[in-house]
Image 1 (cartoon, rainbow, N blue to C red):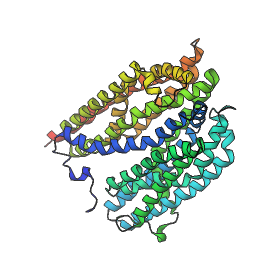
Image 2: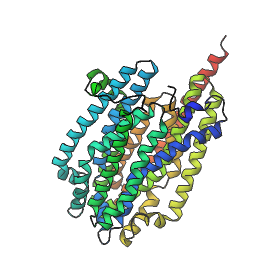
Image 3: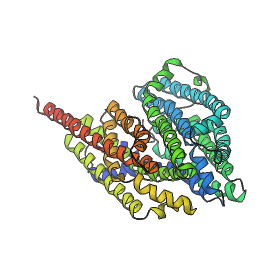
Image 4: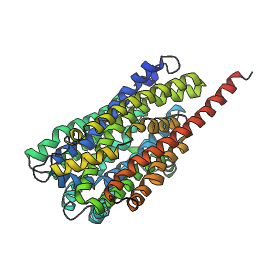
Length: 463
């Protein structure tokens, strides 16, 4: 592709100094992750500040997260599977196949959005109760979800099709998709929540409008002359073979995201049982703080991936070691800084979301427990993403499932049986799972990476 080259394509991944190169490639991906985080964080900050009912409203919004996560997961199933398939087809000179893949995935996303909208509107009340809503928080959860679900088609379009822009090497345009929606959401939230007095409904309206604008931006670009992949009416139909190929590749990110819903449900149900609405509200804030640490870290690791992958293909084990050393070191410094702030001044962090004394006290106490070993995230995420860059997708998927499905969910259910303070035990499950997952990931990576580099060195010395 001659147009729209990314920084990755313009940089010399095999010869440029690793440190500056990593910073150059990671900054856009970190910015994209931080901007995307605004969608999740801003609503919570504003809702938590609604006079008198902010704490209950925040808790109510918290129990809608599994639905929101599932919608994003289904968008990833189609989009994150279809975009690489289109890119591969373009690289092979099969441009029409790439555009047919785009058309098939667009049709699938829109059809799936209609189905999901109907399902969540029909069954939202029993689902929200299942996800941990109480009689007090259910009305707020339904107020938010009733409106948010109506924008499912916009959410899935923006999330699912933006990858087809990145697949062309136009990362700058793709980042604008996220930036436009996030900035608009920040502006519209206080207008609808406070100025128009719509409360929780206002936050949902602002989010739907922002996602609609992002979706229109994506569709307009893909249907316009600036896109190398064109969204054409002739290809807007379901091709079973192309769709199945996309789904097979998108299964991994779908599983990664959809399990977050199961995790949220497990946490909310256990916290509701042992701590009531206040504990569920605290969990909403804890999740937000954890995302504030994880998203930039994920952006850093995504910036390191192309350098690591390129040098893996080139057989340059020395540069591979440098990339991992730099990325993990930078990540460790970042997460340690966040960890220190959380441990020394948890109330300052909690005040970003709510000022209600009871909620602040519980959340500040829980935050120190929940993120007790947060400094290990650099190793867990850094090595896991490195496995992806090295083509070890199965190991990476296992490690993600290990932390959530094998460790964390059972610990949430089992630990309260061994502690008198049941609420403490639920929050304790997070650091225990984090420590064990980080240890497993580090050990696996050490042995696997050493074997990979040893095999590469042996091939290089063979005549």
